[in-house]
Length: 249
Image 1 (cartoon, one colour):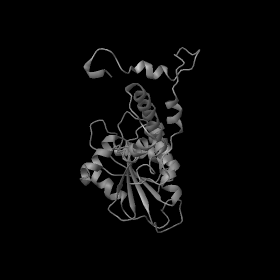
Image 2 (cartoon, rainbow, N blue to C red):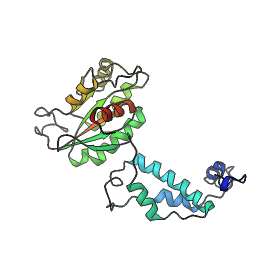
Image 3 (cartoon, rainbow, N blue to C red):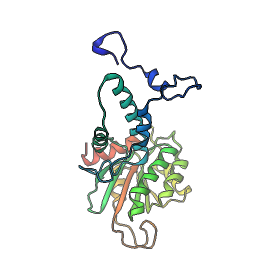
Image 4 (cartoon, rainbow, N blue to C red):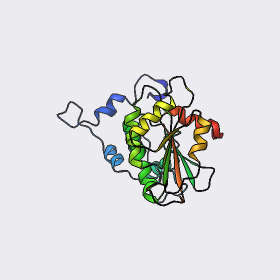
């Protein structure tokens, strides 16, 4: 950052990263209190306006704490104040399209989650968030997955299995780099998932919203499902395809 277009830098990236280093490790030893403040930051238990903060998954909070540390570092050098209330408002109002984006489904008991996870680690983070926010609260889970051909489909599907989904629909968003639904289906069944393939994305959406068959609900044995989360994942193209199809953009 530069003050009023001048030549003297107000904030250098190097200063920020060096502030993380303690004396004797090669840094300046100037770790500022804001880093510790950001590390301890927690969202309000009852957000005042909306549920965005309450529903923020762990990986969003981790990223938010990093952004908060940078903001606190910059605020010291720019002589501005970033308060706890400022941070809470920012988290409540945050919008991250395609990152655990929550939409209301067409059926009253359905929740739609859009997440562009496309690696094994991001699938693990997604499942952790789904279990914490939905599965552990009695929701059943269905996945619609479309992936690029150069991703690790087998490992990705193995991570999704931890959510114990009632249904996995393998499809394509139509991109040239997409893995064929049949190949994705093979990876899903290899991970022990109850999977089907849909050759087109509209068909995948339709299949994902079908009523569960008796005994198919998440966890098994409930017969009639009361509420369900349908998660579209595997790539940001999959997320975009759902938004385009349903006019949510």
